[in-house]
Length: 248
Image (cartoon, rainbow, N blue to C red; front, top):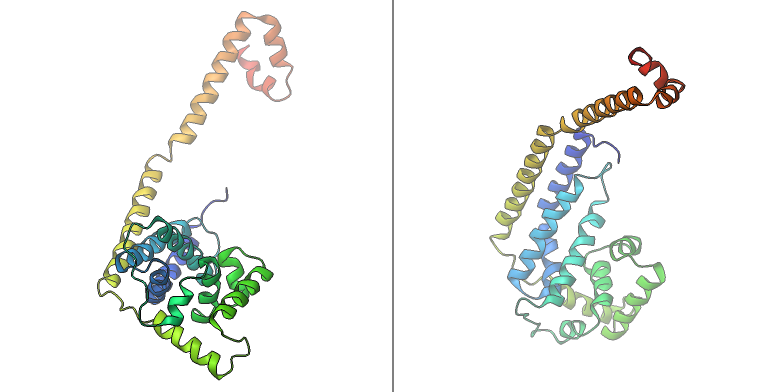
């Protein structure tokens, strides 16, 4: 495993934190569209930010920010949705959006990322680990169900506008910003503690290696003292022979 450069690590962390602070409201809207619950959506967002920052400390290069965060966001959002630990509040003020909520989430996720989160097809492939035909096929399926034509005629634009309005309608929780800062601080404190422990016990490995080498050395001397044939074999070794010669 390559040695981590602390300067690079800190630079990556700083960029990840900045992206999280700027984009957590959008994280919330996508999360809410999946879990349909205020508390569950906040939990998804804060967990995603915490583990994105934590895993980011293992990186050697700055990742594509949107892909890095949205991969985890979709994964955690889907997991929370399937666990059903919270009561879900479905849309009751738009038949069109309510219809979208009945379509397979693996398809509507592609639609949301493309039309509501302004992702490219290539980015969606990386985020959802799909091949190009799969992304295009799921986009086509959802458009067909929602009667949105790919040519984006006037009727299709109006239908998409209605979906966007409902998607961004949930009120952003006032406490979410403070919770985001909390998890950023929590991750930084956890990483600092881990680094301090690592430095504290960093000497153990080299000292252990020296102790092991000395143990092998003295056991070899003892065996050679008791067995002349073994001693002769040791002395015949190219490098070790010179090392043991003064003692045998």
